[in-house]
Image 1 (spheres, rainbow, N blue to C red):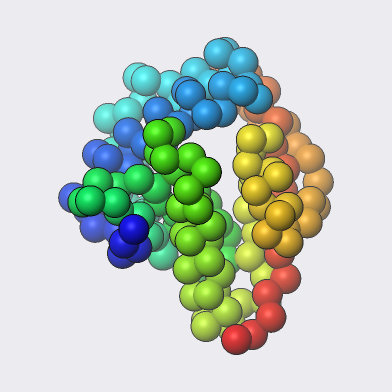
Image 2 (cartoon, one colour):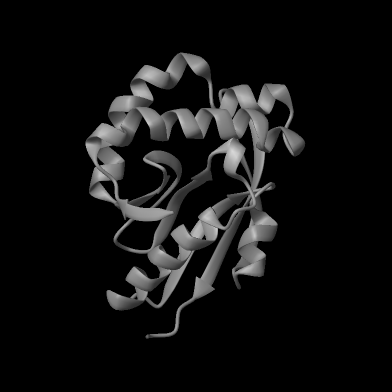
Length: 159
């Protein structure tokens, strides 16, 4: 596995991973109605443009295996871990762990005291195993549909 910085030419694969992962992996914890509100197919084109901008502005890494992107994660410069997704066919192989390790390491280097995220029901246990604490559970409303998730944070110790 190779971890590298995001490039604009990665955007199609990255957005595809987002949609496929949500509609397959997250289906264990969310209803079809919730999945369609979270990742509606009719927003793919708009997401290609808006995400290309935000992923380029954030610190974003992609994981590749044999030249194929199998995961990605990004963090704002103030420590908000915005997105973390692993391809549906590559779950459980440590890809998200490697990506988060890289983001946390960078956060320490730029002297952030904590990193925070909004974790889905599906991702909550992953973050808990990594030392993230739940600040609060919340309900996000998207297209009139309620999506439960968790505000979580992790205190960082300088390297």
